[in-house]
Amino acid sequence: MNIMFCGDHNAERGVLIAVLSLLKAEQGKELHVYILTMRAKSKTKHYRPFSKHAAALIRSLLTAANPNSSLDLIDCTLNFIQEPPTANMGTRFTPYAMLRLYADQLEAIPDRVLYLDDDVIIRRPLDDFYQQDLTGTELVGVLDYFGRFFFHNQKKAFDYINSGVLLLNMPEIKRTRLFARVRRLMEFKKMFLPDQTAINKLAKEKRFAPRRYNEQYRLQEDTVIQHFTTTFRFFPYFRTQTVKPWDVDRVHSVLGLHEYDDILNQFLELEPQL
Image (cartoon, rainbow, N blue to C red; front, side, top):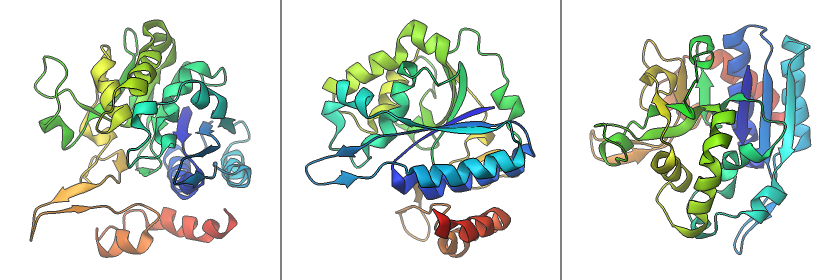
C-alpha cells in the first residue's frame, strides 16, 4: 500500500500519529510512505522542511512492523520554485499543502497512491477503498462535509470533494494533465481553499466514496478514516472548532474522544524523539 503525505516540520507530529494508526489498522502489511517537503520562505515566514530525523524515526516504526516497508522523504523545492502558485501564496494555508500537486513530476511516486492530510487517524483497514478499480478515474474522494452545500462544479447536487483523503490514479492524472492544469490555475487565479477548489473545478473523472472513508465531523460507528478538520458548531452558540490529534488533552476535553488513546499514548512516548 502506497501512502503520501506533504508538509513542513509542523506536520511531523500528525504524520507520526497517522502512521501509528496505519500500522495498527493494517497489522504488519507492507507499507510504502512518501513524504513531500521543501525549503521555503516568504516575506513574513521562514519554513523548516520535514526533518530527516523525524523521517528516520517513522521509517524505523514501519520497518519494525514489516522489513519490506519503506519511507521516502522527497524534496520538492525545485518543482515548487519552477511553478509557484503565485496567486495563492497569501492564504492561511502553508505552501506545503499544495505539494501534492507536483506528484505527477516525481518519478518515485507510484501509479496508485493514497494521499492523506496530516490530521487524520486511520481506524480500520483500508483495503476496500485502496484496491478499488480506478479505470477511467483520476481520483477518488469523499464529499466535503460543509463545502458540499456551498460549492458546485458539475451536474450533481453534491459534487465538492474534500481533498484531505484522495486515492490518486497517477497514470490517468498524467494523461489528462489534471495536476499540471491545477498548478497553472493556481498560478494566476486566487481562490478560497485554493488547491481543493482547483482540483474540484478541473477534475472531470472524479469518483465519490462513502463518508466513512473521510469522516470530517464526528466519529461514527463505521468510520474508517477520521479527519480532524475545522468544523462548525451551532450549540450552545455558533462557532468554529479546531482540535487536532496531537492536541491530546483537547481531544479528550473538547471532543470527549478516547477511541484512539492507545495510539495517542504511543505518540506521546515518541514525540520527544522527533
